Amino acid sequence: MFNNEQIRLEKQWTQLNIQDERDRLLDVLENGQAVYVQTTDGHYVWTADDLRFWRHWNGTMQQGANLFAPSLVFTSDQWTSQIEWSRLLLQQNQRPLLVTESGKSPSLLGWISVGELVNQLAAQKRRTELYLQVLLDTMTDAVTAVDRDGTVRCWNDIAASMYGIPQEQIIGRQIGEHFSPESLMLLQVLDKGRRVRNMYHKSSEGTHVLINASPILDDAGTIIGGLASEQDITHLVKLNEELSTAQASIHETLPRGDDPFTLMDGQSHSISKVVRIGKKVAELNTPVLLYGEPGSGKEQLARAIHLAGAHGDAPFLSINCGAIPPGLLDSELFGFIGGTYSGQDIQEAGKLEQAGYGTLFLNEIHRLTPDMQNKLYRALKSRSFRRYGGQEELPLHTRIIAASRSDLEQLVAAGQFSSELYYALGVVSITVPPLRERREDIAILVHMYLREFAMQYRKPLPKAAPDVMFAFARYDWPGNVAELRAVIERCVILSDGDELQPELLPDVFQAFLHLPVSAPVHLPTRQQPDGESPIQHQGLKARITDEEEKQRIEEAIRKASGNKSTAARLLGISRGTLYNKMIKHQLH
Image (cartoon, rainbow, N blue to C red; front, side, top):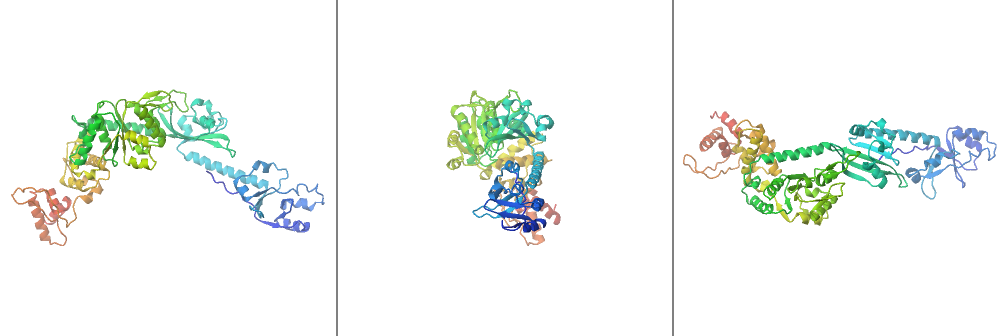
């Protein structure tokens, strides 16, 4: 809200008693000061403008009727909170206005003439208009304001660009002249007096907006107008559609054979348990609730459950509940009927309808608003739903698989999630373990993603160098499977040969490419080519002679049958460090 400047009051005056002679009063006025007199009849202020009256006053009340009209007095509370400006300006005597402290014995705080008050108010009004104009020009939303009769009082440049209506053609005219009155959210706000927050509408074909609208109330609570801002989210809608299409295209290219759960490939006990439960629930059409950290593979598991089910040929659609504004999410889920600022009958099916007999994956389900939680629960319970803005009940055939990084049971206990929706979704719940708890699956996942991206980017299938796998095994993977997949994609894009080298890895992996200098490296037990016993070699230590260092490097290379990567691991150093030391000691 705007914080107007305080009205500046005059603070200089001389207080006289009613018994003081006129000559003393004239002296004060002629010196340019104001005179303040307080009597039982009221408060009086005379200024230099009153000199001509006092000099020619003959002592009759009729001649000094205006001169002796008491000033209108306000306490400081009244002055700063609400002033009846019309009452002030309609005063016939035009005497200065006085402001006093609150209390039983108020003292004068200051005074102001009606003319100066009008000047200051006009200046404040102009400054407020300038602030408002800059605000409207700075906003990226379309802003519209109308009065009680629907006459447009504000229409910023974004609104003019969005709807192709110049300001001069709409400001001062009825908004219904340009748009269908039945579809105008502002007119509905004027009629009902209720705010609208993040309401999704399709204003025209190909244009999607989120509307916020509020009634404008006067001090008595009467609606005197309405204001609406509209955010163009067309690019978000298109981006969401492109992302869904791209994900579906990528997964269609993945070789899965006869078992969709190869997408969850692994040999760890934890992932085997997940796959075992997933295969059982795939045979049914019951809702499933998945838990897991971001990137742990919840959507892959949901897709595998869908593909292994009876309706695996039906669509698999997904929505991230935390990435879509609540107003848009309603229409994304349930569909939409109607339009904003148009008379077109626009109808769009939501994801629940588009999925048909397939599966809808709702990620970040805990991010749903309470209203959306209740609406989704009613749809699951009744197996039917309505499009946003529609009245027809549509049957619900889609299986719902929801996912959350948060414990919904704890959120229910804290009153932050609907218990009804929780029990409707959580008939079967599965927790997908983070990648750091299933490190034995990393090699399998790396091979699977190498195959995927080699095919996608039309490159030969590379293999990961031992140093790369060593770093992968030691890294904690805070982004889980999604992070591993992104790292492999990066390496495939950047690689030119048939092996992924350590230098292709992001900087965060460089610290994991070798152990500390004095730490022992234990390789898996295996028989060496020359029949010697398995190697358990100490890494290069600090403060050894050059000759000792050279001997250890030669020994490691011999034990590794000439493989520099393996020799570097034996020594507890990176392969790059090994090459530098070989050059130093002239080893080839």
